Image (cartoon, rainbow, N blue to C red; front, side, top):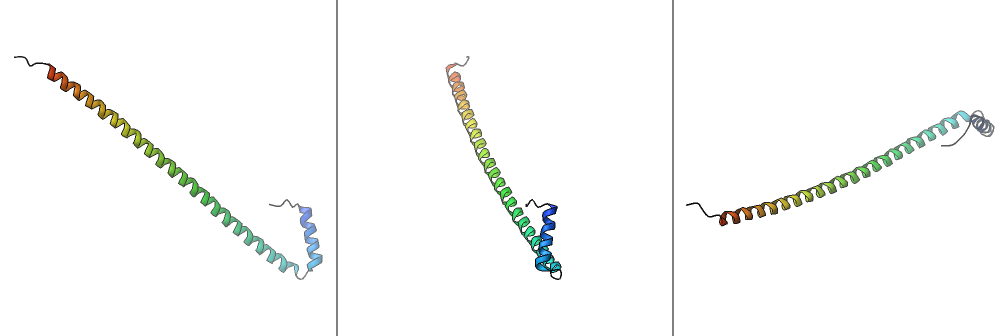
Length: 106
């Protein structure tokens, strides 16, 4: 998050020791540590919620794509069945015509 090196931390500690004093510095450090811990916890919680929402959105998109593909597949199957039915009708008509044209053998 912040790019703070060891020398910067030492400088902050010395300034805090001078400003706050040696008696109150441990209590302030504990309080500051607790606040930083809470902040990290809240950030982690929000980050997890955002990631879950993104995953949920991705799953919804995937579900919609699958649904669209299934509908498209059903439309193709229906078209194929319609074409097959028409072809079967033509064959049946041809068979009927050819059977009417042929005369029975006496």
